[in-house]
Every structure is written in C-alpha cells, then in structure tokens.
Figure (spheres, rainbow, N blue to C red):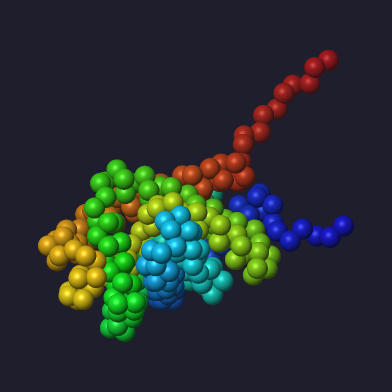
Length: 285
C-alpha cells in the first residue's frame, strides 16, 4: 500500500505545535525580517486581486471569483517561500496551551509580526504608488483600489469584527491543511480553496487591509484616480490614517484573533493535544 501523501489531523496538530515553538526561538531580528516579507507577499496578492477585479465586464460573481483566486498567491508565497504572517501565527496559541512556550513569548511574537507585516505592506503600497501602475486602463485600476479602501473604512465595528472572525477561521485552516501536505503542489491546493473562499466572500484580513487602505490613501491624492471613480474628493473624506485603525484594523484584528485562536488553534488543541485525566476503575469480582 502506498504511503499517504499527507499527515492526518492528529499529526498536523503536533507539527503545528512544534513549528510554532520554533517560531518563538528564532532571533527577533530575523523573525522581524520574515514578518516584513509576509506583509509584502500579501500585498503582492492584494495588488493582483485589484488588477483583475477592476474589470467589471466579466460580471459580479465571476469577477469576484477571479480576483479572489489570484489573491491566493500571497499566502502561497508566505508558506512556501517562508515568511511570518500575523494571522497564521495566531496558531502559536497551540504551543502556549501546551506550555511549550511562555505566554510572554506568544505576545512578543504577535506584536513583532504585526508591526513587521504593517511595514512590509506599506512598503509595497508605496512602491506601487511610485510605479504609476495605478494608471493602467485609464486609471481604472487605481480607481478600483481607491474604492476598495473607502469601502473598508465604512464598516461598522461589528461588521469588521465578524468579517475578521470568518476570515481568519479560513486562513488558519489554509495554514493547517498546508501543513498536512508533503509536497509543494499539495500545499498550494490546500492554500488556494480556503483563501479564495474568504476573499470572494468579502471577509476582512487585517494584514491585507494594511495594504489596501494605505494604498487607497496614497491614490486619493491623484486627481486622475479620483476622477476615474466617478466621484469627487469629498466622497473620500472618511479615508485617512486615523480611520485605517479606528474604522477597520482594530475591529478586524480582534476578529482575526478570535477566528484563528479559538475556532482553529484552541479547538484543534483541545481535540488532538489536550491530555485527558486518566481514571482507574476498581476491578469487579
């Protein structure tokens, strides 16, 4: 009988726990660089998603499907090339629950990866802004990016929270399933379907939004882009560095943590790793 080309769930739990222990042992300078890379990788996928999604001639559903499909390249780069992503690193909770790392190490890793992801995302947003690629198709690409950013800072706290929960439930499942695969093709397919599903569904990813919203803020200063949206600059008054946090990142980040920590990390830890107390029953004569 041929050996299965994937690890079963119980072994995935052990592998995720051990990998996450290793993450907390990486020197902080190197860990931070990997976090910057992850922010950039997710931004690459987000930019491609904007480009494909800016073509409104394909119909709503098919456009959403295609733009969501190409977005998946971001997590593929993170997992296969190697980088540290805040949403995926929510699974470090499994190592803390197993008492393999201290809770202070968990918080230190989360803070470092979040800041690093933000830097990487802003870096790519700036490079794209300076590149002028937003001018493609008569600035329709830039207009699409600006409208996405504006929409994201129009969410209520509750909307951002629950969309964030749903998003990272799927993102962490993508990481979980990619861990099960023993080859690159298996990892790519494991990543593709959950990530495509969350993007097409309109869920909210904090690290992706670290790119989407700042990129929109930059493009807001370009008259041609504003004109291509069919709106006026005043219509984007709510898009600012302040609302990046107050109207999106705070609620979405909390939601992402709940989705990844509870619905994936805690539940799979409880099912596959938590040791149940051993009870002894007296033998009956």
